[in-house]
Image (cartoon, rainbow, N blue to C red; front, side):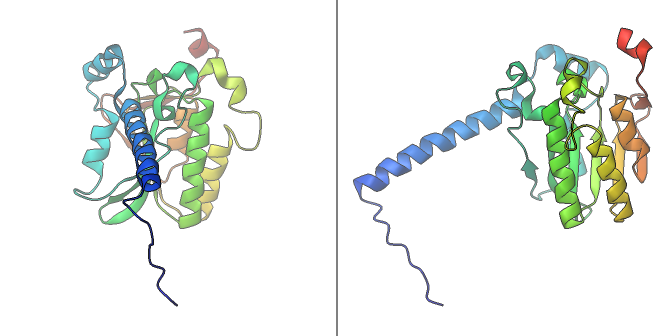
Length: 221
């Protein structure tokens, strides 16, 4: 097979024009990624610190093998949605290396609406589960979730690709022999309680981790 060599003239005006246009787009992408990564309210940060919890990115740093790559998935999920406040759809997810093995990590960000699940949060989790099943990757959940965001619950459960599909997929993953490991790192309600219940191994963080179901008293509270 012949080698296809580049014939781009880097000195041409057209090249420079295209380069500058792409450079502007790359800078905009970096800006959006930085916003999604760092834009959290001071109130939410303070509440997290008071509860003795670590920021989600620090959790990942401690979990992943040092100096190994992390392929983030859906870094701009929910961009421009939900009043532009639910960055990354409230979840940091991606493929990383733990103890030398590639794993899928799905971590709630409690500084965003207490880790509540929005419709796009569900879509993002489903995408991660699809990748897990296609590639037989172990699934690690760092859970700190208030369950479904109730004002939008009508959008969470209406069809085959929402809400309950997450738990259906967990059952399928179990049947496939894919390890599912969940760390309960905060108060996990309703849907946030089902994930650990269907996992192979569960770790509860002493003093901060707890799971409980929903119901009328919780909704009223």
